Amino acid sequence: MRADMRGDMRLVAVGKRYGIRRPWVVRGFSAGLPPGRLVRVTGPNGSGKSTLLRVVAGVSRPSAGQVTGRPHCGYVPERFPGGLPFSGREYLLHLARVHGLRGDASAAAVDEWLGRLGAASYADQPVRSMSKGMGQKMALAQALLPSPGLLVLDEAWTGLDSAARGALDAAVTERVAAGGTVLFVDHDPARLAGLEDERWDFGSPGQVTVLAGPAPVAVLPSVVPAAPRPQLVTIRLEAADAAAAVERVRAIDGIRVISVDAAGTAGTAQEPGR
Amino acid sequence: MTALLRYQAAILLRSHRWIFPLIAYGLLIAVGAAGSSSLAQTLDWSGAMLVPITAFLTRAMLTAEPDAARACVAAAAGGPARVQLATLIIPLGGGALLGLAGVVFDVLTAEAAAAPGSGGLAAKVTAVAQHPGIVAGGLLIALVCLLVGSAAGALCNPPLLRHPAAAMLSTLAAIILGLAADVSPASAAIGHAGAQATGPLAAHWPGAGALLGAVCVVAVTWGISVAAATRRDNWSASSG
Image 1 (cartoon, rainbow over the protein chains, first blue to last red):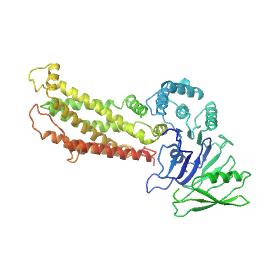
Image 2: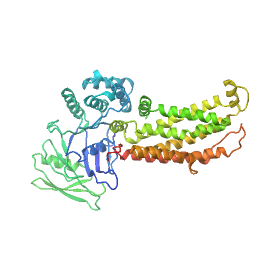
Image 3: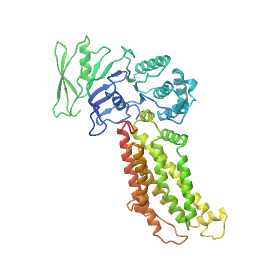
Image 4: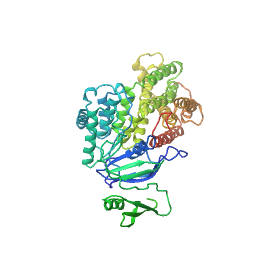
């Protein structure tokens, strides 16, 4: 459950659906999530972003494929209803202990994050009487206080005042600089603009496209059916750092780069059963 | 896991969702104590009443936490399975505490069958101490009923049954089946006890089969509930 030493986190042919007769929300999605990576997840409402984030965070199990090497995770849901019978501080102390912090360390971490998010003045108020923004700060504080190796933010900025939005931006860059992996969804394209290493875009239903780099430079069809034969995929790169991108594709487990031509078109094969 | 159990126990205590089961159990065992002719019979009744009480305590706990808060805890604890397990353990523990309190109440209020006429509490305790089998048998019957109640609560509530009305009705149905159906370990335990010698000093024991059956039923229903908790995101009835 704690930091996994077997290697980087990766999603291997991950699929999720809520019942055998239900459509796939996400299907056959593979991606690596090495330390220090900042990933923006984009797509219209209802396209499955939240579902993918929950699978990444380990809140729900994928229906197909697997998630390996997940570090300790902090998760912020898109809405945090205050239906809990605690004060904000009591809630955070409980969550700090669940995150594995001990006595003094948990109290110190709670105070630190209440201060950074500007929530100290109403931390002793019951959670159920808090406004949307106050509740959102409690959800943020519980996710940030263990300094998690994986931080998953599902529209975490909504409802926050501008000071807290700034504090969250700072917390995200801090996590990434410290070698943490951060995934986020936010409908403001200016949010952390230019800082993300990768963009995962939900286009057509069930399909996720990985767009690497602050400016999209590559398109990788990600639907990998359980084919008996290796699947051949041709990727066209239109960027100055195409060679580096090819190296990154080469590093993905289960993928073999077969040929790279001068125009930067790489033929890759996904091995079956991976 | 300890932190998770503390968190869930705090939710149960602070949300006051334990008050209704506590009052209901108090009323039910008071009625039972008034209507029974021997201590063993009173203990049978108190044990049987743990089926509905533990089932509803389990329901109270399974519906106490909003989805989003549950998701945060699941991420923090390293998976929803542990969270669901803690959510099932706490009402089982609560039911066990109520069951123990019920046994103490029964012993202290029972007509002292072993020493008719003597009314003091000390005399009653000594009388029971001379026949420990009565209390031990009663505790085992209570254990069987506790497990059956927990199984009924786990099977008929979120994440398996999400619609509140459907969950309530099927919890009630499961309780009635648990107490009345021949195949239920709880009814087997009570029936087995009732069929034994009915002297005022005779101990009532549940059959070994009932005890084993109750453990199996709990293992299976908890397993199903935990598995469902790892697969579902939204527990509320309206969302898919």
